[in-house]
Length: 474
Image 1: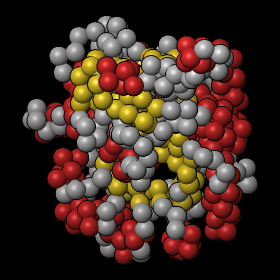
Image 2: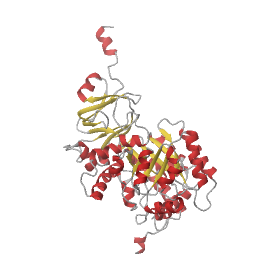
Image 3: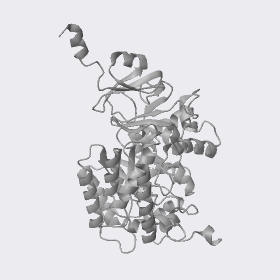
Image 4: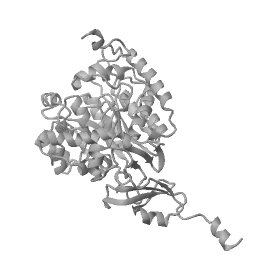
């Protein structure tokens, strides 16, 4: 064989490498924002290079190239807080505040939901998340159908959809006829065992709410966190009534009670943290508690406004969450990102209260820090995992890019998402999730949602369970 033939037979440099190029690469890491740049990753899902597109193309002539250089490349979004048990109960209870919403929507479904229901709802919402650029989700499954192991359904669904995630069971036992603490602890153990073989999914032990647990279950949970080195996912200081009740019961806020009982001695991410005193903010900072800010759900439920700028000044780790599909009522990260910026501006009546770069940081590397995965994801850096999003620069939202940060935060929508990779594997292409029969999934979800609403006797809330108020002329 001639030298020329041998050269033709030799694999080209960059074979097996994917290069994603854009007008901008927002690395959200030390390299900052790069013009006319690209990110390269190999078949193992490891990022091998970030920099000028021309340079990466030159050293990887055999690479697969995605993107025409007009779009924006950025890390996958981290949804810092949601409830995948709510995937089939969206669009109800808009006139309820938190406690009413529990009684009207969440509890009727939670008593009846099954592992299969949760898996199906997770697959449905995973499509929505992926197609809004979310590659990692921090989930808390909340239900009262003990014995069903419904929380394991979130792992089933995320695994099938190839998403990265952290899953917990949001246990609470202060309701009538709740089983003993050992039943709740058994589900934590079962969930941890289900997650153990999953490469992309991690476990946290869940505390649904501090006030929703008996002392027996609360202490058992804190002990288990310590004995197993488990991180914690909870809610803190979500509504004003919570602070009043905690003060009457425990002589301080839920944040202060969590500190006194030792919960905050562990790695903790807490949803909301709206009603925070100076003492509470000091505890969040000194105990290095991460906060998941959920602006859309906080507005729908009229819960209040998280003091995000103040928390950031104190060095608190903050990510952005959609919150559950029943309180948002979507899993659209672009909506959460835009709302996070606008809410602070109008609340403080200051245009500088929250900026686009700050919000985008919270949605990416900030979210990764909040869930303890910043060494693996959240920014585009050599050696990190390839959770990558390409936004289409040829659509109406991003055709004009005076400032890529502002255009994403205030102008982009899920329609802007072209391709998404999770751990180097293509999960969305040409704006649609791969290997998903959308019509079949929608049909299956409709049927399951109907059955769940009927089992939960959700008349007045769900059209599947009976006539709605507007149909009755109310």
